[in-house]
Image (cartoon, rainbow, N blue to C red; front, top):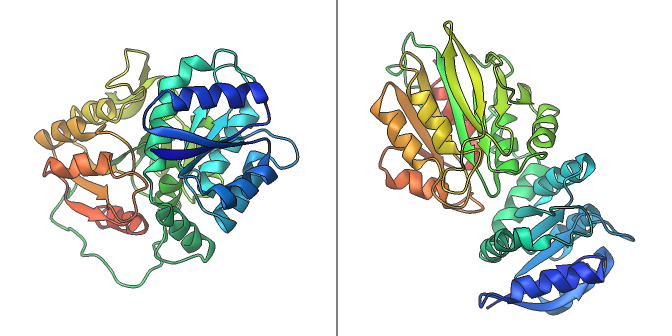
Length: 358
């Protein structure tokens, strides 16, 4: 059994979360904490395998607590967040600071209908409990030290440029990710040059309301422009479009130009947006060369779409390596198709993408 510490300032929420988590044979709640200070003391004393941490708390809020946890007593953390704009912004910040994942409370800080997300919470806490926390702290240390191997093209050594691929064809870049994705995307998108000669479309598994905060935060960090995708907009080179949560995002061709098509059809394998649906839509646009990138995440989303991409047209596929993935699910599944051209550490993926941009 994996040991869990539940941190929330509401006694009602602590009781409810604890009951949900202990309903599975995989988790044991070994303690509760009322605020960030209490949480840090109990993590040091009880040594849990995973922590659920509320974003909004008195004394020391979830963000400040997370920052200290990752510095003083690193442990996998799943954030519990409200779906307000402020809550979404804080949650995205938490992902950058080292939280493994988050669960959105369905109706605010005190959610009487928390049962709606019981299965999701259990799945994410179980998955987080298996994460090797040294991967998170190693990545954070590299970022803090501004390691040139993490998300920068100003690095020593070069990868061979593939001059035989995609000659004369316009290009598009497609990225799919899930658990651990926000920080992986930060590494990749901030490592790409401002004058990138292709648009990028990204599917990050997130609920509605959070993808805009993610796009806004990445836009402030990257040289390229990053925004949440909108229905019908024409894709521009040097811009990354983040698929909105709760809808599927497709790339379609309209009058010789690429544009975004959003739809609310049923989730694919539990996901909306779905990487498979994005990849499959791009496979229909034959005269573009595509660079498909699969980053950290649970499950296998993207693998079926990669198969369709490779059946039609010119495609190069890059998967994140086991060594840097927070969860080596989606990349592992993509690699198993035997259609991946390169397996790269997260810090080398920007450079790998650029070797195909000739």
